[in-house]
Length: 229
View 1 (tube, rainbow, N blue to C red):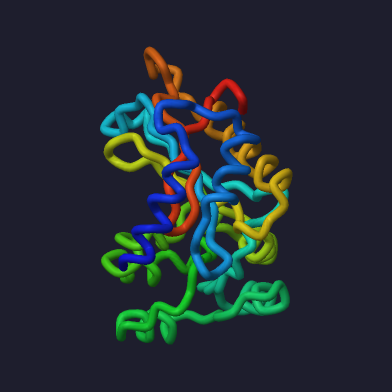
View 2: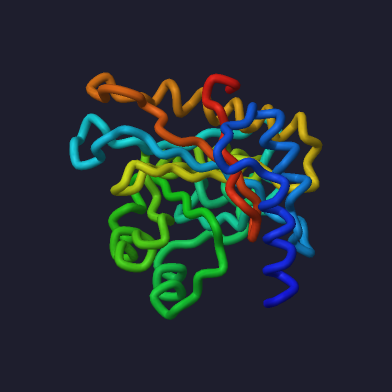
């Protein structure tokens, strides 16, 4: 722990906590101050001036990052018949029906994304208490309840991320790995930011983005100037 604390202090010394950096500066600092011994994830966080208690101010969706996430997603699909075969051909890791429901209810959770055809939602609904808290429940807004299972699987494997504002108006998203070239992280950041800008509720008043930051796994948060995005 002492060594880690020393690394954290060294990282903090390189950052002006009172300054909001340009996106290029922030990405460079995030890479420079990373001290994890593995290929750490790079995440962005937004604090938005919204009231998620109001239906028209809830923010949730999905997008495919231009340079992917660098993370291999394990995709599970609930489908039957021809759609099950489509999912398998597209590269889904697990495909099934009631057998998967029983397995998940038994404690198995070795997957990152759950996709379902609309006709399967009746049985998937039985997993609400397990998948819901883990943000894994299929939802039409994120493109995970669909008849086009092949496209959904391919997107999930190719860098698709989902996002959702929490009760405090915070949104977090993975935009890549420390090993990514800086320009690719910047491009991913800007692409996600464009989605956040377009997601602004018409009823949201005042400053929409009250804070934007970037960080790495185990790293320090670096403030980003929204105007540089």
